[in-house]
Image 1 (tube, rainbow, N blue to C red):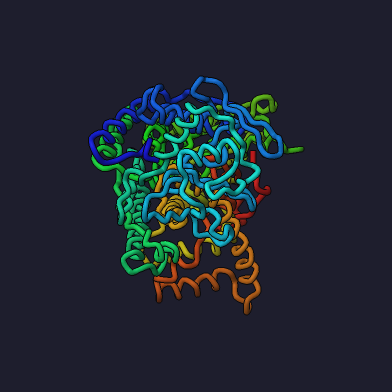
Image 2: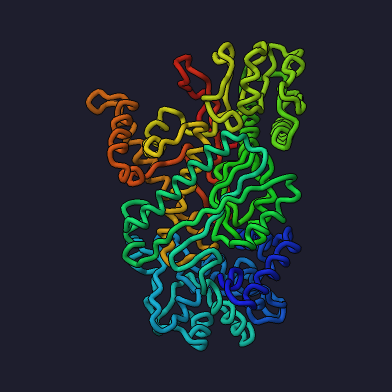
Length: 614
């Protein structure tokens, strides 16, 4: 939106700095009632008063009407639908249907049309196109006469559009006075009127954030994967659209090159905010694409919220507890695993442990995970202990496992280096459980003598389905000659680039940050549902097709990909997660996990449970 994202010119830069400051000092001032208020709360954290206008400015007054449902007088906005249903306050705010970007949305066969300046007040020669989706038959694109201040007022008050036709009956009729109507009009005339910072006619600037203390091999694998995906995207644009570029982008000439900037953080998390601001000042970006941290991420989320900057699917173990409109995550990391394990234990009819002993590093992630599980098991009758390991390179597992008995469950919140150090430790009498998120999946160096007894809290797709689902990723990785170091991490980085490419294609020339988040919320579930259906068919056919096994069939596909790399991204992959979906105001795409064990055949797994959503 121009109001939040204006770039270019001294006045715009001053407004941008003022907005960032105000967003920072006002963060944490939520509004709350119903769905409309939930949307307002998400936006208020980073954008309350973020327009750089004083309370007496018409645009600020219009923003309050649009976002909060508050009139110039301070009274609640009220409206009545054609059906007679009355709405008031936050529930009546325009943002509920037309969304923060003003680009509208779709519910079933009902289209809430764009209300931004390019669509309401197009300039000479403007031909704005909202979506290229045959389901809507171009209904979301401009198909009415340009509005004037007078016809817009009539539309808002009487429900009659600029072509003298009745508007959708769901559109409330608002009895706005002249001052309120003038303020709302002023706000709409600047809403999403210019591309966001980090966007030019041919380029899209993106950043990825790398936190300190990430293991060097994981950092290398992450950056190598993400950079290769970005390079392939740019190669597609350069080649005129062979893959990772849609037909609509080619036809409307909206495809853009990606410039990926790596923002490396140093030192204590309390200093990250200043570092991020320095990076952003040197080069504003449209979005943060993925990212990696083995500890804190909250300063990054806070920065993105204050800047109204989308942060798409970073690979983090500890997701900040407070949500943000601008931050989307794969899962809640170790907090999800703690909740899943607690749900599993609470639901056991027999064989419940008397005691849960948690072994973890004494760091932010370890403390958060052990605390979450302890809280989730309160009132269960199961005693919970946390035995935190110090900072020593060689942890004292003998002390940590002292006194473990057969009726105990031992939950290990450990990363691969610590798991490797368990090789010399004695198998505890109690059943050992491990965090698959921290271990990096089933390929972690678990002690050979432990594998028959141990269990994993497993937030990923089962390997049998994954062989097919990640076939494209695996083929692409081999063609790119990228070593498999951490499968979950690398597939997350790859998918972040794929979903960004898909969403950018759907946005066409409407390159507004809020709209990016809205499209992800609306479309990721639909896209992944379609891929999941295809996955089920692929798995079924691979079991019967000419007697081939899944792995043989996928191996043949990979050979084809190696022979012709251009097919790699044509067959869209799903993620390592079995279910991804978002909704309005949601910021976690995968919400469950399995409890699994090794079958004894290589690294094969079998599920002890169904998909547990705590």
